[in-house]
Amino acid sequence: CCKTMYSSRSFAALVRNSSSHVNKTSRAALSTNLVTDYFSSLRWRATETLTSLMTKEEKEKLLKQMNIVVDVNTKQQEEPDVQKTIAEAVVAARQEEAQRQEAQWEREKERLHKEAEQAAYARVEADIKIQQQRAAAMEKWQADLAKEQVNGSFATTATATTTNDAHPLLGQVLADFGFKRLHVVSADILKNIPVWKKQRIYRHDRAKAMAADKLKSAHFGLPGVIALHEDSDGKLFILDGQHRVGMMTILQEKKTQLSFDLDRVLVEVFPEHKDNQYETYAQDIFTEINKAEPIKLVDMPGVAKGADRKVITEGASRLKEAYPDMFRPSQACRPPHLNIDNLRDALFAADIINRHNLKSPKALQDWMMQQNDALRTQFQDEQHAAKVNKKALKKAQDFDFFLGIDSSWYYN
Image (cartoon, rainbow, N blue to C red):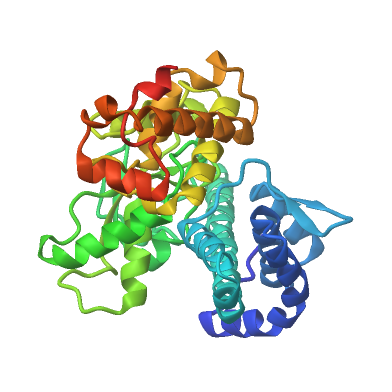
């Protein structure tokens, strides 16, 4: 079952041969900035190429195991709630950054398109490797079961891997504690693993700031571990550490001599057990990991409604795009600046969405601009102006942005 696999050389050749076929579709998607459809199209092309030598039955079985449904009209994968890998998220963030400057976008789009292709192919190839190993393990178990039946003894449980088997992506197990496994993995592999769908949003500017800081403190190495969840189908998701993986991706590209090895990153894997429900188990592990870390209330699973979180996130992103100079990556930034995650959390804590019946990101942005107008008028009064730092107020006036000077507006 599904025994066909490609070497890295033949895989590279397939990517080159399929690139001209992908270009027309993906460029059209890029021009309209439909990032989700764009990656869905790339993944479908990758899936088509990587399964081209399989029989129809093998291909259908593999796609079913990978939870891929194909729209026969658009030839795109229907991917409900499919999260990007870090590699895909990094490329998408760079596309958005480049598109803000048309001239830069013209120079960069071909290179970014190739990076997006590579990220999509790496993601699909990783999924296929996992499913092929699971299929091979099942065949082996069935063969062993048949032998045991002949000999009069019976195996009662089928397992995807054995203790001595190496994981197809993560390699050998350093230690198996039952509830989790430890592996040493390269950053190249980690960047092609999707983020758990309820993780906080990937912020590329945060990853860039972390990379710049790490270059100044490289002697500390890479403290901590990257946490992954492995579902009952063998699929891997990043539960904790997505911005560290983004940071490592950036450091790899800089080709700077580092005092630590990005090919040796400590990873802990929490496998799904048969008696656990995926959503509950992954959520419980995520919450346990982040209890002592500054995860925002709005990002805690089960706290904010999905619709409210979406309005808050997109509304805050609109404000940041309008005033990029007034936002900082650090959550400890000083007035008159804002941090986007602090802003999101404050909007949620003050119940802005429900109190003002704001149904869309634009409605939230408009409401925040009304508060900015009111603060501008307020700080024209000398008595109010005297209560805040003069330098901070001067910058707020220069950029016409006052929301970071005073937090009382959240409760208006």
